[in-house]
Image (tube, rainbow over all chains, first blue to last red):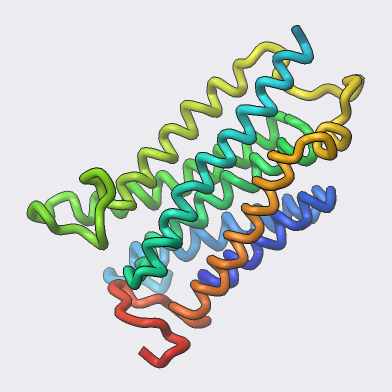
Length: 51
Length: 190
């Protein structure tokens, strides 16, 4: 999962350098959302929550 | 005066990119010596890359308030992760905590400081008079990008370190969840 998020961020960086801003912004928000979901998963895992 | 403000903001964005990448390259060196990062450490790196994406947008596509907003959102995410990490180890005895330390502070504490400094720095950047690009500017972002070798070097370095982190994260954690205290790389069966 972490490797996937890093990959999405790398794609976002490449898209910015190629001036494809709209797709890059989409990748940015996707990566940030996944980061928050995965952070929440790690924070609440010991409590037995699904997420 | 107008050109000066924009040039200052542009150069400070490049400096911010260097300052955000330096700890990432440092952490990579630490990792290559055998000190594996925990899941929260990797999540902090993701926060730093989110900041970097906004800064690269400023350098490549022109300086816009929205681009600063992307970076600030990344810094707030990273700060939440680093704050959680620091609070997990706040009651550890002296010499405790996860991993090694630099100048007496653990890397996750440095991450929290870096995110805080970036938020303060972005407030200053947004306050630079005429520090935002406008559509009628004589020097377009594309021309400025072509003329600035440091900007190109630092942006391509960001892509390289991001790809390296993606590969190392896959090697360490695999497709699933990373162990809280990793002792070896998943790809090598440990």
